[in-house]
Length: 70
Image 1 (cartoon, helix red, strand yellow):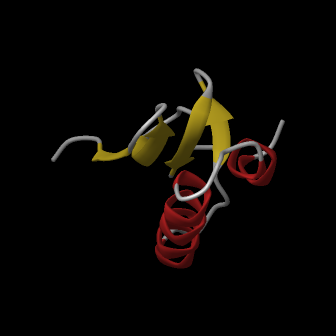
Image 2: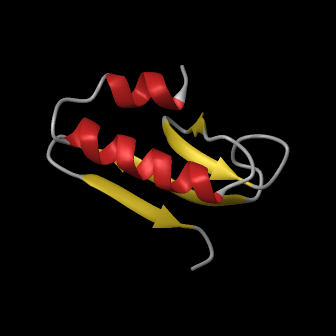
């Protein structure tokens, strides 16, 4: 499963939020996002979850966004 697959499965308005977050994070990161522990993660390392930088995760009523190491 890809980040796009993850996002496509979400109901509105969560899908719209996740798409915008994915575009924003993707524009700032040199490598594409990947699923790591079941949610999209953007990393600087050679593999998903290796030197992670940013993530988002959708729940039933909201989407969280986070940065590793502040």
